[in-house]
Length: 188
Image (tube, rainbow, N blue to C red; front, side):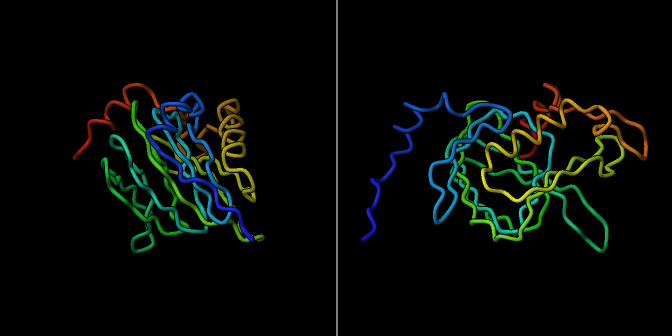
């Protein structure tokens, strides 16, 4: 017989555990079977776009976040911003490059499906100047928090990986304060 865990009271959990939400990802895994459920706080410090073969479900509990996406249209990649406001739910289909931008004093819940054995998660970085793909890291995801942090850390330390092969721009490994403010105050 399966033993059920007690319900999690999110406000109480945040009061007691918000210190666990640390950059660069600011996530904490709550459940891992049969779904991956994470609590994610802000601000985060990411410039990567995550590509997951399975859908991701977002619930914005507190504040507002920005989900930067790259969408294919007529064979071209288009950068599209999706603001998810407090109380909003959003289902992101699989295989959509996305960068979840979380601002200060915000909290969301993200649900993901377990990864099939042969699946690969990818982190991709694009040139801020010309939009070209700069770097990509693939891995079979077994521990999202740890693996994302490792890949982001490696990118931050590798100037060659951050240099665009098309235009030569050396890209930031973290969003600048100016970039974060511009994104935070974007359309409502």
